[in-house]
Each structure stands twice: as C-alpha cells, then as structure tokens.
Amino acid sequence: MEVFWEQLPVVLNALNVGFIQTLKLFFVTLAGALPLGLVIAFGSMASFKPLSWLARIIVWVIRGTPLMIQLLIIYYFPGLVLKNPIWGSGESGRFVAASVAFIINYACYFSEIYRGGIQGVPVGQEEAGLALGMKRSQIFFKVKLLQMVKRIVPPMSNEVITLVKDTSLARIIALQEIIFAGQSFLTGSRGIRGVVWPLFFTAFYYLIWNGIVTVLLGWLEKKLSYFQ
Image 1 (cartoon, rainbow, N blue to C red):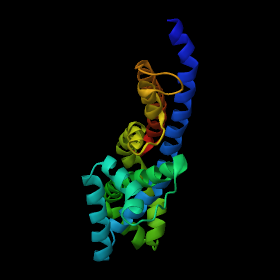
Image 2 (image 1 turned 45 degrees about the vertical axis):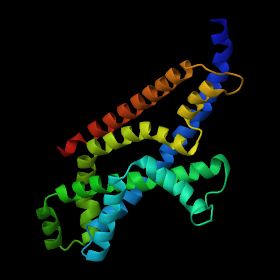
Image 3 (image 1 turned 90 degrees about the horizontal axis):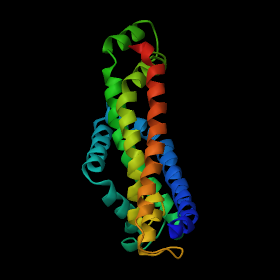
Image 4 (image 1 turned 60 degrees about the vertical axis):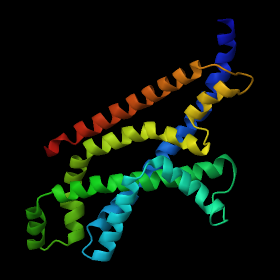
C-alpha cells in the first residue's frame, strides 16, 4: 500500500499530461470536422454530378475503412512511400497527423448527418421562400438552418460521444494520449514497471469527460426543443 501512495503522484502527473493531449485532439477534431463535414455534404448534394460522385466516393471510402488504418496510412505514407515526411518528427508531428486523420474521418460521418438534416426539411418551405423572392442562400440560413440543427443534434451527439473514446486510437502512431500514458507503466515508465492499476484510472478520466459532454449535449437538445 505504501508503494501505491508513492507511485500515485507520478502516475497522476503522467495521466494528466496525456489527458490534456486527448482533450486537444478532441477539440481540434471538432473544430475541423464540423465545418468540413458541411462542405462535403454540400458537395454530395451538388447538381454538378462529378463533384457529387467524388464527395460520395470519399465518404464511402472513409466510412468503410477503420480509423486505425487511416491513421497509419496518413502518418507513415508520406515518409515511407513518398520519401517526404511532411509531419515532421516528435510528438508535435504525430499530433498533426492524428488531427488530420480524425478531422477527415469525422467530417465524412458528419456530412451524412448534415445531408440527412438538410434533406429532412420539407421542400415546400424552399418553394415558398422562392415564391416570396428569397435567394437560396437566404432560405438556407433563415429557414432551413435552425430546423436542420434541431434534427441533427441527436445523431451528432452520438458521434461526439464516440469521438471522446476514439481519441484513444491515436496511440497506434505513438501519440502520448492518456491510454498511452497509462499503458506505459506496464512496460516501464518513470521508474514504475509492471503495474496495471493506472489503466483503471484512465477509465475514470473517460467517464468524467463523457459525462460532461453528455450533459452539455443534452442541455443543447433541450434548448432546441421549441422546433418540435
């Protein structure tokens, strides 16, 4: 027991550093994937067929392959195949590569949610707007957008909660997120080796963060309930 209390500050310090990396990846992914997903959604619904098919093929490929494979390809392909290690070296390079992979992956999932939300708004509302002399851009921002937001919040919430846990996949390219930090104490880190209890502590970090995200998304859904 005495050994546990001696190890605890060291473990918590490492887990806190890893959790900060996890949070950074989470927020960077949302900041990039939310707008990019909308762009892809517009591309998939474009009347210009080559653009529409290109967007749908990209979505099909990304959604049909594991995120872990995408991480490995995005991180290693430029250096090993193109002989151009664009991500650089060290933790910062791994973080940039992981961010790019996560943004592309989640943007494709978000795009399908956006598309369903936009197409779920009755066509008659757009026709009425055009009859009143409104431009299509005005109809989207003043008529469709808020209704679309209400429709997409529940499925988007599921994806965001999944993202909280998916950030752990970044350890496949040795990004030192929280599970990487916890697992390092199994093989030897900071003078501690062969202990498994830090991994249980990582679960509490995820539970707490997932709970906060769930509460915030639930609050947002209630605020938008007036569209029902």
